[in-house]
Image (tube, rainbow, N blue to C red; front, side, top):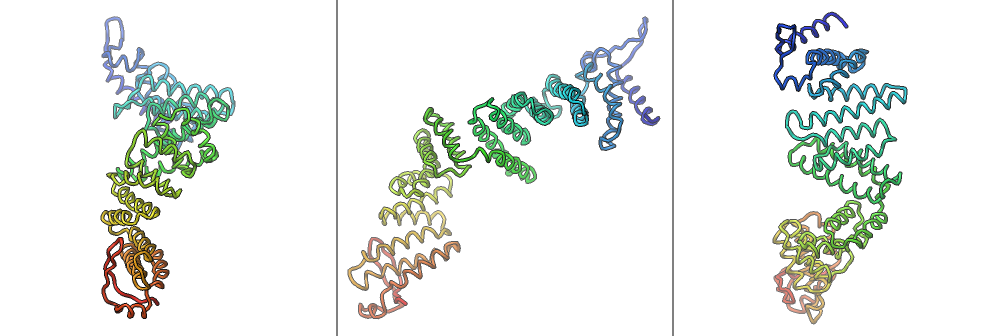
Length: 469
């Protein structure tokens, strides 16, 4: 050690010892300390302070060298003395201890010595939990966070102790819940997979824990987005991507359906299970399996809501079960979510159109337009109904074709309010414009191109006379 460093250590020692109020008794020197100092520095307070100062000064030199200086050898002995004899002196003893032990483990070649060092590292974490269970700044419990770091280190340095690592990480996540660190969640999920592969856990646990950790990550992504913390949003998205990639081999729809189909058959009234099934199948794009619809319908029976009705309606619409979808969409229109309510009216209109209940379908499409006037899709639906019923709206060559005018009007209106409907609308306009009455037919019935005309069928629309081209 150079003289400058030694002088600095000695000055620090004198300052601290003076603060401990050393006094002289008749029978010699004795340390008289307040009770809180005795508790903090232990029975041999002077030795405690000396060793703290020694190891901290050496630690500064080690850090300054980017952890490459051989001074690490001078840190170990005083740090160990503090760790063993004055555990309450400072939480830094454990923060520094982790760094010291990690370095020694990573640079130890002998397996027996390495195992001993890993045990010591575990004790560092345990002792920190024992003596500093709460965070020094916030005062909040930190047992879960410390256990998480302990489990990550055990997983990293001794892969044979995967059972211990799993138990530690599981406890960490149980304690911290939504506050669990992303890295801890990754290692916890990996430990579950290893346990399942070693037949220590049922393989269904892989799916259950995947669902659990993704929920926690999603919760944090939403919270961080609201707080505007874009950096940590990206971090948590990366955590999620890591877990998704790890889960991929176990994420096939048949496997998920097999595992959760059996669970649902055993516990059909378990709403938490039903929510887990629908969420998981939705995440893994397994909505086409009948189990998804079955679980959704069962959950809706137990906990009906406009949102669950909306989801079921969409599934039934996709399967072209229009009559069954109608009741669900009617319920979904009551959603407080404007987007869902609007879509419910729109899909209700499509379902009613499919069963040829045109008057009511038109009413629902107009409701959708009322909520979102810039969505062109409901206009397309109305136009399709006008075109489909054109022949039924007249009894001659002229009147049986006039509804096509109204249909094309709606298609034009659709692309006017919503550019995304332009291609769809133009195809329909090209198709149905050829069905307009011919110029001769228009003249024969006493009308002129460009003049106004009122269609009076199951709907009433004012349109413009046009000839086919």
